[in-house]
Image (cartoon, rainbow, N blue to C red; front, side, top):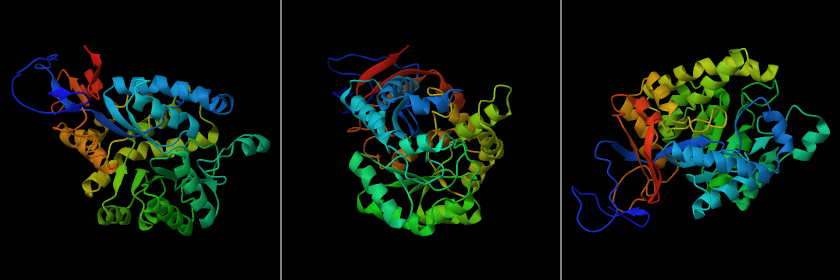
Length: 380
């Protein structure tokens, strides 16, 4: 039973007046959580041009479209980990107010990154890059603490950093550690003092392990984790967000006839993409906590649920895969009181599918019913 925007009771049958939503032939689940999206854009052949031609207002409008698409796919909560501050914070508030249909948004805003690294403007003329360099780009411990504090002031719910190089930066600077150990320690300490978690984009093992030793809260991607990484994950209780769809997408684009990546991007995509399933399998076998995240915006928004099939391919059971996008992701984002379960007092975030996802996890790619905060957005 739902009153307003919350579940008030769970019981057999129905007594009293109210609207009945008949889902007796469906499988009902909590609204799903995607712990890694980029709502204000989506990779395409014009992405690099859009980066210097679209205003933050343009990107907010693009984000409104993708927020709705994500909600209709059954994802009632997302963490947006990298977008212009003005656009994503405006979109977050618009969905919170109900002005724009979309999921609950936890937003980092702009990533804290090093000068010249993944997350900084790259691959354009120097004068253009200077114009577009964010205040979240830093060098040295003191400067990196400044960047964290500015992001918190701007409205960040969580701090995202790029601890290593990345695929889609147009630079051949590699995939290894970017920040110094001292910078990582300063970032984590500054964020924690201000009540914010820190999550790190990290591919190379040196960056993964240095961030974990610095007390970071979660790792995005984790491509080259090793036995020491697994030991650190388990010791600290840190979550891994594997983003397998991103690896699958960049490998397919880079190896296909319509590759629109630059040569530097292509080389990294072909290196990383094929490794990510094995990475997730190794992490799962090693007892690492896994939370669901797709990096959508690299892959297509609305296709988020395909990540479940990739997690099962990596060795998770369908139940374990579903838990990554419900109780695990809620715990990872410190939202266990607001998401990931159906229980009295919880927000009425519910979805339904026609078949049993424990028998066929791809049923989650065919969502038939979506309720967020007691409002029905999809009903087939």
